[in-house]
Image 1: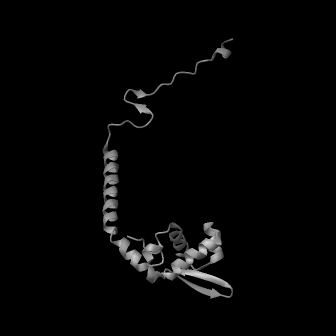
Image 2: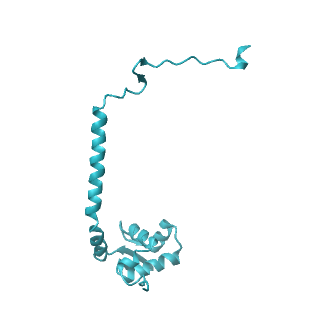
Image 3: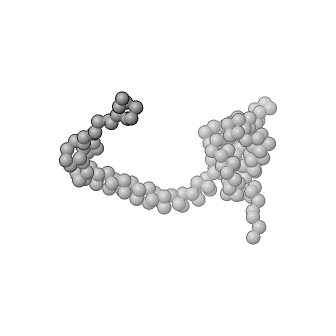
Length: 140
């Protein structure tokens, strides 16, 4: 089966890690191409190509302000990605609840566990340390 073009839908477009990185960067606010290039450390032609793909599938919008092109995310187009990912939220929430329950169980057990002495002590009392031994050069 032939692989779908990266410009065919939002899922294929975000399969590229650099595009996800650009989307994440644009999530906060509208930004010019030069700022995206500088912030992400990518080459300008590469950023422009990625922005073109993201724009073609509708994930970002562009507007011109003088000679500058400003890009921002299109929340409405990102919705299908969010809805798809939300199908797995129940699984992750279940896993997070299990981690929380386990951590709480360990915390309860350690607060009621009196079998271990506090650090620096032993059942026989405080530990004694031997005085340092002089080395061979100091014996003279």
